[in-house]
Amino acid sequence: MKKSQLIYQFIREKEAVSKQDIVIGLGLSLPTITQNLQNLVELGLIDTSKKISNTGGRNAIAYSYMENARYAIGVYLNRHYINCVALDLSGNVINLVKTRENFDLNDDIYLRKIAETVEEVKKNTNFPDEKFLGVGIAVPGLISDDGERVTYGLTLNFTGATREQVAKYIPYPNRLFHDSAAAGYAEVWVRRDLKDAFYLSLSNSVGGSVIIDNKIFEGDYRKSGEIGHMTVIPKAGDRCYCGQRGCFDTVCRANGLAEYAKGNLDAFFELLEAGDLGARRHWNKYLEYLSIGIHNIRMLYDTKIVIGGYVGAYIEKYMDDLCARVDARDAFNERSDTYLIPCKYKTEPTGAGAAIHLIDDFFETI
Image (cartoon, rainbow, N blue to C red):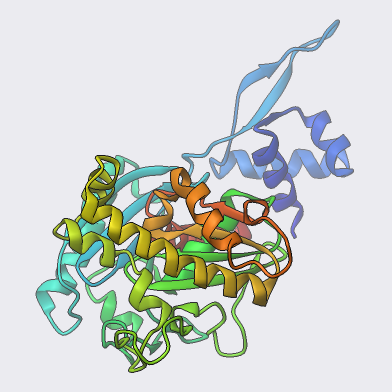
């Protein structure tokens, strides 16, 4: 890591520090720190308008982190929605727009709508253009190593689609990302204590991310974590989009719950909280299948499991019920509440993860 990056990250972690704090904290020479601080100030990345009080001496300049110095936009394209979110350098949501549009990359109107949604969010931030880093685009499919092509997109039948095609009308730097990997990346980014874990994404498709040493492990062909195609109901289950029957995805995707409330997941959980018997039956069945999947993941990885995605945003108040079901399958006399964790990043984690990739890319250039 370059010295400027070390200094910037140190300030970002501490929020406000003096020059002497940096000398002691990083062990760098005063001239080196002075020169790099000047460069960071000129880039508009740190603020020097505040002071740190010193007893018996002159107050020192406080070098503080500016989270609004840059921002990025993340887009999540799923079957029925274009979800677009803007994030500052701390991963805070600046603006969020959800537009109901059916996924169809062969429809020029749809491609224009993606770009229009990006422009709407960009305008809503009220930030100048020079602060904009670009657009990360997350899709429910596996992406090639160079980020230019969808290598597996059976979810929405778009295998072979290219970044250029998806971003046809987006006039800004952009990249493609696998949706589950993006969501897992967002979770790792906001909770640095999560060194090793499995991120379970329960959105309109079921997927996952394997987290090792705070990084996403993608496997030989970027299929690591694809537990949506783990069989949980042999033979008798519904047919999955992959062609097999009884996949985890068929019983634990979020829209399976939303369909009970006319496609609205928020409304489903409102009905559940209101004591609606039909919603309760659906939820009990969902939790039972979810417990099977979680048990299998635990047997494979023996690590913490984070429940994320659209359903993960609601799961916290139902953890006791879920843990009891997982514990009933336990073979090693351990309690699932010691390793099962509700997600921390709840607001559009997939789009956010795509944007955070661009923020991290920016940090690498400092």
